[in-house]
Every structure is written in C-alpha cells, then in structure tokens.
Length: 331
Image (cartoon, rainbow, N blue to C red; front, side):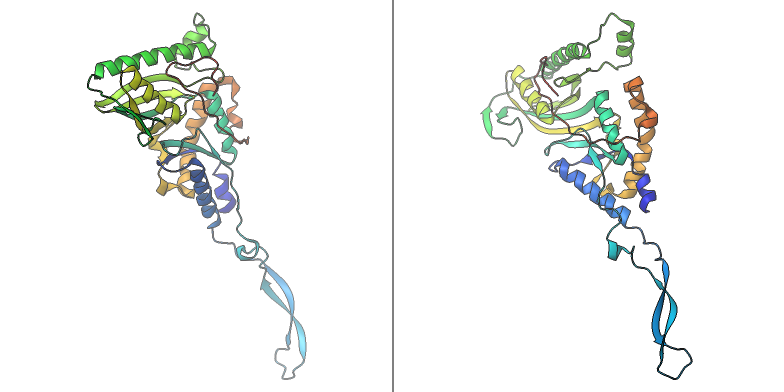
C-alpha cells in the first residue's frame, strides 16, 4: 500500500458522528485508523549486501580462519529498526458538531484540507432535524439541563406552530437578501435567485432558508431546518424561542445534521467503516461532485485544476443566534 495508498487519500469525505462523541476524538480516531492501514502493508524484501565474514576454509581440515565474501540482508529500513513509515497525517475538520449533536461531519485529508475553506467560502446550506419537547425550560435549552420552568401546552396546535415557523422563515429570508449585498432589481440577482445561489457575502448570524414541521404529537415535535452559519446551540435556542412564541416553553432533545453542503447521510461512513479502504473509496466517489459543486458555487473565484494542489489548516468559528437575525452579529 504505502505511498500508493497515500496518493489516493487527498480529498474530502463524510462520516456519521454519533451523539456523545467529541469531534476532536473522532478526528484522532480517523487519523489513527488511516495510519494503521498505511503501515499495515507487508515490508519489501530487504536489500542484500556483501560482507566479508571470518570463518574456516571450506574443505580444509586445518583450523586456520579466512575471510569469505557472503551476501547478507540489510536491516536498515526494517520497520523494527526504523519504526513505522507513516507517523502523522493531515486530517482537517469541516463544520463541527458539538458533543450532543450527531449526523454528517465532513473531513479533509492531505491536500484535500484546502477544499474545506472553499466549502466555507461557498456558504453552502446544511439540513438538520431538530426534536423538541413542549412544557419545560432548562438553563442550556437541552432536555437534560437544569430545570428552570414547567408550563402547560394544551393550547398549542399544529396550525399555531406552522404559523410561527412561516414567520421565522420569512424574516430570515429577508435577512439573507440583506447580507448578500445584492440589488434585487438587477438581472444578476434574478438569475442567482432562480438558481438558489443567493448567499451572504461575509460573516452573518444564523440564517434559516427553510423550516417546517415533520411531526407533531404533543409534547413532542420534529422540525426540519435548512440553514447556514449556525451552531447547534443556536438551534437549541431556536426551539426555546419557538416555545415562547407559542406562549409556553420548549426544550431541544435532539439535533441531527442530515446534510452538509453536497454531503448527505447516504455518503457518510459509519463508525465501523472508518478504515483506509472505505475512506479511499469515499474520497474517490465524492471527488467529481466536490469539484462541480464548488465550481458552480464559487464560479471564477475557484480554479478547479488547483483543487487538490493546495494545503490549508482551518479553525471554525460559531455564529451568534436569535429568532430573527441581527445585523452585525459574526460567524
């Protein structure tokens, strides 16, 4: 495998992060599994070298010693002498998930780490399913947080919830246009709107491009949220604010990312698949879509011929959140 296997490891792939696992531990686990796969190859046959060894002459009964030319293996490059061939691998992390959240998490390996900044600059949307629970409020908006208040929710109906969600989506769509710095009267803005490419030009608070209720069975409800520049804490706070708008309280019991840009649950590797061969296959399968989607989103800003020739290390910053976006909040 060796260097040949390493050459096929440059690119992006997605894994499924289970709840309760820290993103840093996940990244370290993936790196360890990749190094284990790269170093698992059978070592090549050692090179032979000629040495003059002291010994008795062949066919002679005398005890006189003489030097004889002998071919012996050279152990200079043996793994037991010089250690494993690969000890470090550059693994970059995309949009992070906190320890409570689960779902699609994008990673980059080698030169593919540079593509993570292109994903960031493309301001691609992400999909979440968010599960809420009516009737109580906690200090951290999570179901297992410190209880602050309990309320009734008998008056809450699906129609009232849908009305609140429509209001949220409308306010965030106006904010999206504002942060995109586009003149809606121009042909360019019209064409971008038709293609769904209106994106904020710089940092912005969480922007929700779509939100709807998938399931409503009080006290539980399930939302599908399409957004950008979010953190999982902001999504939990969103559930809390929806509860207040409904004249009750609500906590978030689950946050699950189902899509990150062009990576979906179908392309995410499960924990049992975090090995060299599966990751190589995932990178190869995703490469054409990564190139085409980034070229479509970034246009002339991106040179697709250089997609795998640049290296980059990335640190993500989390945006602030409110029910209605505020101008000037950072991501």
